[in-house]
Length: 143
Image (cartoon, rainbow, N blue to C red; front, side):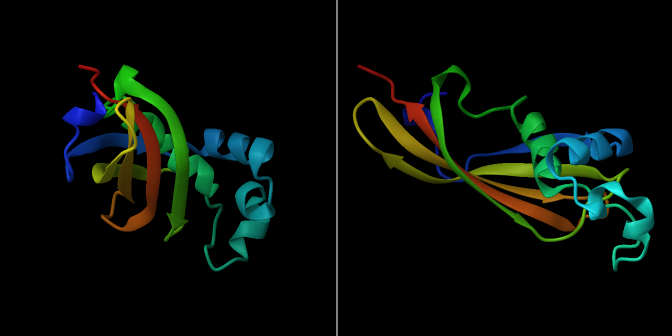
């Protein structure tokens, strides 16, 4: 979708993403190998009581589902920034769902604009577990 076709507060639901234990641990060993993500005995002694998913893995699991309904498609030129806030732990077996909404639009030139997407992610209990704000550079419709 071209920048010109985007509207403030436009939103879309994001399909559920299951956090699978094996994938969670594999991701942790490769990218975030602290004991809270990789050592079940260690995790039992923490306030969480069990392993928690790496935050980036939780976000990327939902982001992959967002891309199935992506606002921009082929009109995306580049990502500019992203900010993730982790609010509650995510555990193996959790099912994450979300809603993506356009929260800001700034026309930069006749060729492109900056679109801000905010995503709220919830677990299967309806608890907000993370938020994300991503800025993307999107093509304008050239007349």
